[in-house]
Image (cartoon, rainbow, N blue to C red; front, side, top):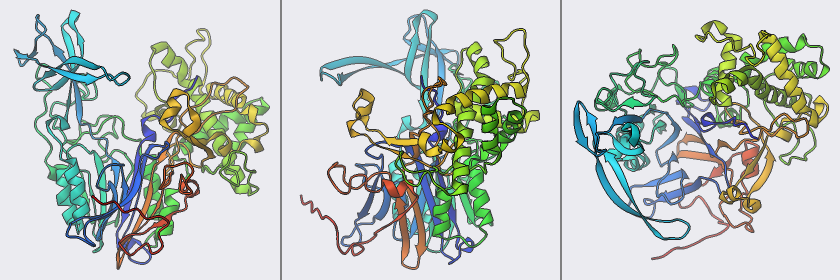
Length: 597
């Protein structure tokens, strides 16, 4: 029985860009690490595409690409660099349609509109046998995905790219741009990529351009929310798309840097109602709560004007858990009042913790020796105690209410709620006494009693590890790169596991993907399944952009190759390698393949 922890917030990204005024050698810097599922093979492939150096083309780019695409999603060309993170714009709406008696039309603005039907032929994936299916579309909304004929209802979906997408054109444009201003213009072609683009060029100009076709929803309010199913009767229709000039964006800001991490990009949701601030470009509920963004900004500001490629790499590897700062003090206070030695032991581990998450081991193998560095040991132990305690306290606090309501809320969202409930309870609008256990009708538990109950459960879960000096984060936070065959019970093509640093919503994001039940026998399983799928740091030198990268994979997918997943160890230890760029950059290639028509 596994409880999901990572959810959508594990799949985010970080990027930031610094103007020359903020760097030690007065060169622009850019860093990017997209957070995606970590599998085997890697979702990315590092490439260089050069149609200029020995030809007449317009493209010379390098960076991360998805296999099969002749372009780079994040990287650089001869003159500028760019990075991407997901904006989480709300680009989709679901409509409840009212069907006519014959089921062949929907009611829209008081009149019937005929449903479009089309028979398509598919091939059964297991047998190859042709299968014919009749699909339905509502002309003004989109495909019908569900029908309740008895109640004359149906659900349709509208998405901005249903009318066509020019996203690939946008990526081609930025790859050919020579200045940040040109990149800004070229990105106007983006339709639904839903990305925060940050850019820096040879002139030191920086920019942030979260462009796309974002629906205007003038009717949006808490009573008519675009995040719920909308009436399909014509009262919740898009009023065109937000003008590019009205989208959030920045060009050469006075502070000299820009950073994004999937957070609220306008502040519209800070009061709990993103529809009342005049922001037309609404984001979805999936956006991150802002801990990674805040940590990035804090570190960039603290570094003043002395940033280098080394400080960029260090920030990409940062493992400070900001959410823990709002949760741990209450746990420590509750533990201190306990009479149970095991709870006091957790409290002591948390009391000394400075909120970072090293593995606590001397290597990446799970059986590596424990680090004898006192600070590393303390931080690793505290990190392990926190994550196990967080899971248990969530269940003790909210598990009874969620079970009674028969609803499921992801553990990351529960953690964000607990952080607010423990540090700023006055900002909560709920009237539910969630500290009380609803299953004990004759007893009203206090906050600290519930916290101690959760800590006692955490002690049970930590018990198989032994004494607290054995609570090394890397022992229970291990990454396995799983192949698609693992889904069918074939682990042969998996790689790992490896002890992995980072934790819940850290910059070096490594959200626990699951945990086993507290049964007193098995050790906790808090390994991640997603994280930085590629790390790039790019410096704009006099000769042009120069990139170092980290990659949880290798250049050859044959398992007997010396280049099979040979870069994983550097990725685990946050050690970048230079990416050669240009026809003369590699003088002694390990292997050369010539492809001719």
